[in-house]
Image (cartoon, rainbow over all chains, first blue to last red; front, top):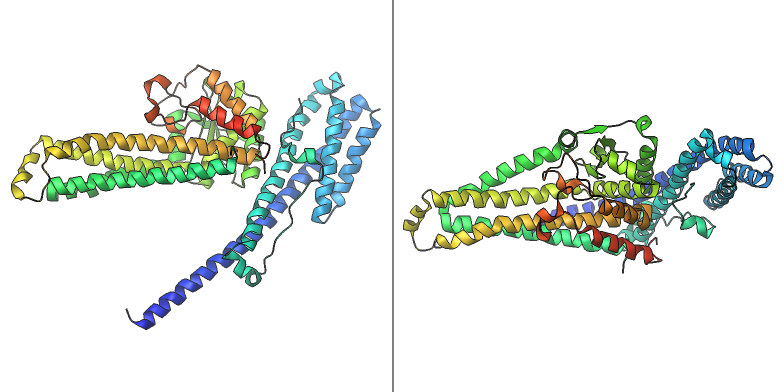
Length: 185
Length: 302
């Protein structure tokens, strides 16, 4: 093999190497956006379930005004939040308000036995899991992206790919983070 | 060090080593074929590779459809079992995998399996016995374990292991027959051939070793799937308690067959029939102990 073809081969493998690193960064960045969109989808699902839940609980425990009010307010706050930290904070507040309401529901056997509530229970348990799993998946992808941004060889191509570290989705309430499995029994 | 990440890394490394040894075994048996049987021995190798590839990869490619027939599983819709669909959907969100086909097997024995050539052709199936005997958290653990097999591409890994073991078994088998029906003739051809009787022992041992390695791969993939399941749900207690339900249960899967045994979450075959070296699953007590260690580690969800 002459010198020229060696040079061509080296150049070609260098170009392929750059493309792979560049694409990895861009792909991770897109995945972070997708994962965040998934969180928003699940938060929306949960917000849509709440009016039905509030109505059902009102029917049996209308005087639990405070707990009901908390949920309604937290839901309203969560639908208007727009920045990531604000969305995360509103999400945490709503998770807590819901937990409070469901704890109160425990004291009303008629409510717990109503068919409407039983149906809601599975939907809420599942939605609560979906919300926390989508947060967890988002954070996992952000962790991968941030590691790629900081480690060689991908770190060299950060400015070329116009990709940087992204924010983690952190829910303030510590109990909301380590309790992905909410039981509504 | 009971953290799901370290357990995942360890099992991936062990799978790689085992598959490497299986490859080495193929080379050894091919070497013996060429050295002690000459030209006719060399001809056996492409034949064995061909047969093994066709038989294993056909079933790999159509695994989701074939398995439905073999296990009498029925694909269901969301309305047939909303909770199961919710659970599978939750784990898909946690893992970033596409939604698989979900099937139910009419069988009182609690068990579950996953198959499909890639995540977009995945199928997860659960027996009615499993759905009836577990609570939500336990079912979530089982669903996560099955989806972990999908995420780790275990249909592919076991197809690779089965192909390699098949090649070794076929070469040994054909060579043994050649020995029987007149393998002696090669002795006249010259001095650089190994005495033929020396080839008998490796020919007997190689397929046994290949089967043991294949089973070891399967066991490592089970441990890996347990760890990956925890990485999805961050709830080792759910899966641990599900395995305890399976361990207590004594009913045996009706449509059992060793052909599909490796796919189930718990071995559907009688445990005493297979010795530990040939078992497709790690002992259930050991899996429970590992999950307990993850539970007691406060940093398991970091």
